Image (cartoon, rainbow, N blue to C red; front, side):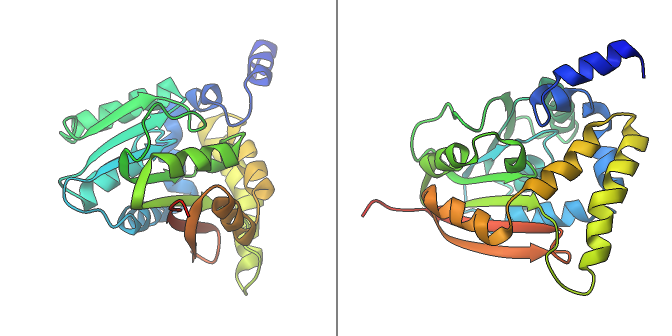
Length: 243
């Protein structure tokens, strides 16, 4: 890596849209390899957890290249989805996938910030985010925004990676997250961004703490579902009605 590239990387805040711009072209391929393809099943579980009815409107935050937005459109064939992400390059890749699948009339990807959603209250029947809440600087604010734009009775689903806390396979899973993920990610992408992935997973609160954070932000009841030996968790809740 040249000195100029090192300086440029130092200027990119970890977890920012600019950071993901740098890996957008390789993002999907690297994710498939790092998760052994299991991330697709996790997204299907998340899409189904929204329990969408006919004609539902869905908001997918940190949509990235649109994988979860497209999966929601697949499991709920008559819903419409808006995906928001701060990375313009990730959105460009996602829009090409939307066009390729002939879903441009149902799936729209826009630039946007999870901490300040440009939508009125109770606009959506379901709101979801996959592998993105970890990168949001002000998580309580983003969760509060998710609760605000979801209709009462609608579902909010958060899919996020985590470090396993117990179980026989926990040491192996931790080795995968702490060692293999940054090593293979850097090798396959030619970038340092996947070392940030390991650090951000380690810094993310345990499942019980994050569920409490969701409740304080106005989302309840929160169901916490560990996936694949606890390397990932699915959190599902609904906006709290005013008392």
